[in-house]
Image (cartoon, rainbow, N blue to C red):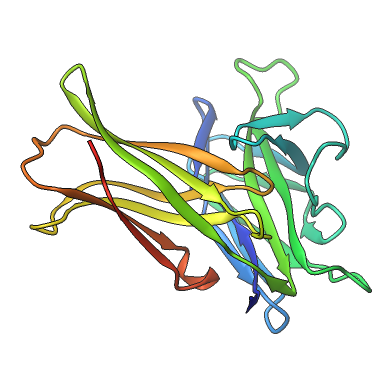
Length: 250
């Protein structure tokens, strides 16, 4: 068991909803704890029209194999939603061309909050504000993960197999959240040569959300394999120092 920290994890992302509105986010993830419960990020518009953005919370049902299904309304089916714990402002943002606006995020700790992990998704939707739009109003879902109290992070890579298809090599990984784990598994994968230490493939910021039991992960590479391979998984540094290394089998 380890004393947890709070994390709001934002994928790095940018999207061009219309040709003249080009939205980017300044930070990819936020770590909050009892001593640092607030943070902020910038929504910047690198286009040449005023961007109108709205923010809200969305939720997903996480299946046993890690597949996620959107919940269209409310939180029924979501595992430990964080909608009552996370605060953000403003809810609506207007971003002039070649400018940025700040969005502030905070963790609201409720009385008698049970230890555990709570997840919601910050949804950002942007367009140029026109009544008749030339394209879709695109939305981007940014994961919000709040950890409170003691968290048990327990996981195991149970399979790592080397395969080849159409001349492309890939390693298929089965990564499991063990039954006593009370958190999502967040971190980076790397395929390395056991003898040379060379890097064959990488995957960063991979997430296996609770309550999934496992996730199948595929890393492709074109290099010829002339040595034994290993998979190395490193937990997100501010969430822990766990490292898992397993041999790749044929």
